[in-house]
Image (cartoon, rainbow, N blue to C red; front, side, top):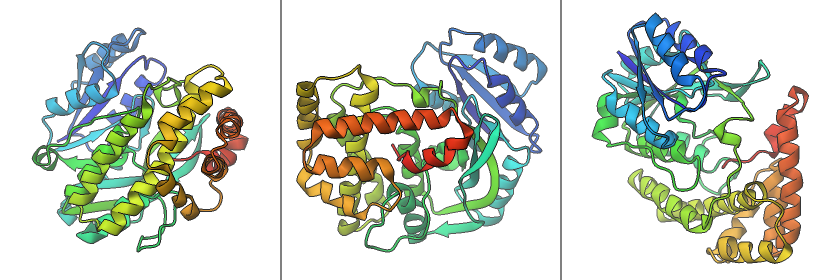
Length: 367
């Protein structure tokens, strides 16, 4: 049996479609664990109605505690031999779980991952494409971990081609592996909970299977939590803690000291961009003095001179970091703020127009 955990918060618009797509799975032995995280809309009523229609659905509630707590709560309740996660507004192909399960059984792997696509205004575009493959030993690090952590950067050591993304919803885990590895979601800033758990799982897995089938459809919803703008206080310290968490998993995966050095530098460059995003999107217009003070405390004080040099590894076509990192390297804080503001506006505009999604793919960087 496969346990599917779905955290729900004010998801009345799409949650019915999401759960029905899972219920249509060709893998009939399912346990669908919906965790309502203190919704204030009709989500809970919809979940209770769906539960009456399909006995495989279990509904739980908790006071609003966030997606991290909801996922951990649901995972602890799972009774299946296999465990996966789904977001409240996405869709799952009917054959996905059957194909992932068959591949895991054939390979004897601890976890498996599928390819994914995005849905924007009902139109589908490929997102993270994988091959039918089995990874073991150091190939998990070079073929899956590094293309995820160094996404957008070309570092000078062995790395298999392509970029991968940290989304947890493409993964199916053996529940025995999940428990033995003591995996739990956690977050330091906003949405790095997927990255931290997926990285830890990959670092502890003996075998990882991947399939080329596009089985998970991520609905890009500008009103979702992913695109919410909230200012994070003292973001630099929280980013440093997140980096240390990732580094511990990399060390467990057998990364060399040289690889760890490049990881720190590239990750900090990504975090500098995220810190600018935090200032631009999380606050109303900041004054020049506020911008300079913010950059001095949250960016330039964090091993900046050593890490900013990693911008030279940035791949072509990465518009936001390609524009912002050179400005920060000159400590042109106000200019970087203005540029980030313009690019963030373009990013959001592109999400409202399917014709501009190609632009969005180029200007959006990994967070």
